[in-house]
Picture 1 (cartoon, rainbow, N blue to C red):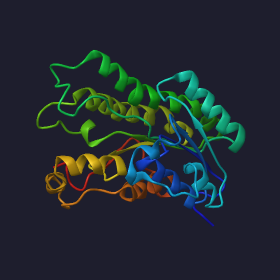
Picture 2: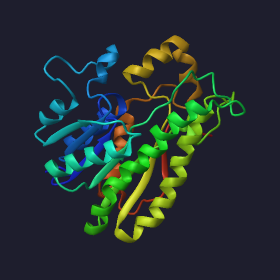
Picture 3: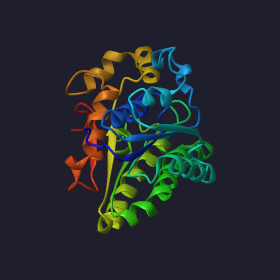
Picture 4: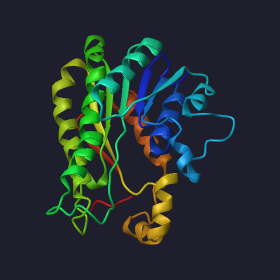
Length: 266
């Protein structure tokens, strides 16, 4: 028996990368998994994200693990689309026990958007993707969790939401990730009375298929040397923390942020 047999989990932004690994980990633990992504075939954009010819999307991969799985495409910044996707998942799999609010992302170059020169259009894009999308996802599951008096909610921030960059750039993205941290802490206080835990994971330099391309271009060794462990993280490193936060191992852990950064924070 798996730790999550009989549970229903939803992972947003799970078509590729870290989110895909989160969905795999939860399925391997026995959970039925719903996937929401703006493009369920976005893995095709990056050679390092190839899932193999036998599977069309991550949903097919999950089904091969002997769990129920469904996937729907939705823009996480569109509340109506998010609500509809969650309703369709719940109609198929049942009430959601575990939410991994992973979808989000930045815009523009990492050398742009210095704190004193934020582009308002780009700020609005990342605010909707990261912060609003997290709020919309939580709103879609919280009523049923309250009724059951059970739930595990994991939000996804970033090392950039915990630590300023040396140059003060890409601050529009960092600010929205910092907002998720504070929202998570308040949400934990709000929902604790219902036996719902709320925590955040903060990945650092993680070698997904997409990011590895950027690290290689910029000089991977320099990023590795910033960490105490002298290596990039892997999606599996993050998924192990998701396992902890999604199972009974973390029943008395709420309102906290676990950084998976290999020692970037010091």
